[in-house]
Length: 182
Image 1 (cartoon, helix red, strand yellow):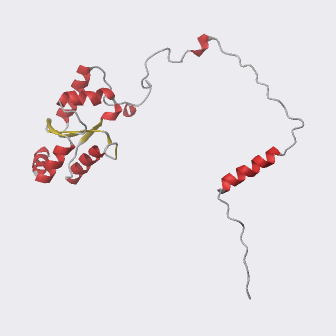
Image 2 (tube, rainbow, N blue to C red):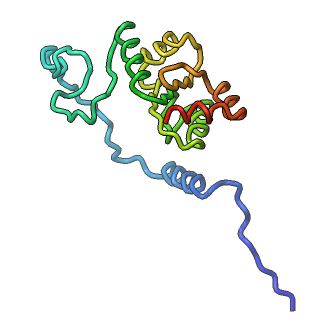
Image 3 (spheres, helix red, strand yellow):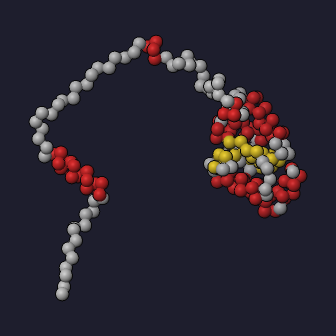
């Protein structure tokens, strides 16, 4: 006994596309009797005095009633203020990494590698995200006279970027340097 199973023709369209095509065909055959024409209503525009922002032209900043935990720790502007903030960071932290992103979410492969190297040594280190502020990003390059990010500082001394950190890690020199930082 031969039984032939018939299948529906295979369509090359996806299900949503088939539904959209069916709806457009149905819409094309609907009668157009009684179609309401769209008539836009003129909107009234408020006087210019009511369009001023509620902050009365003040520069964008943080709410005065905001908790200190939500305010940035380094919110300075001007070259000398940036340099002073960077110098303070470098002197206050035994190991400091200026990087793109955060240790949990690096935004650059070199920053990620620097984080992985420091994590492999189990050392405590502070980080600064240079993507948070263009002034800080340019200021750290000027501070260390080093053109790339990430930048590592140990005991207030500039060590280098990712390539130097990786070489020191491979040579075992980084472990010796980090032991003195603890």
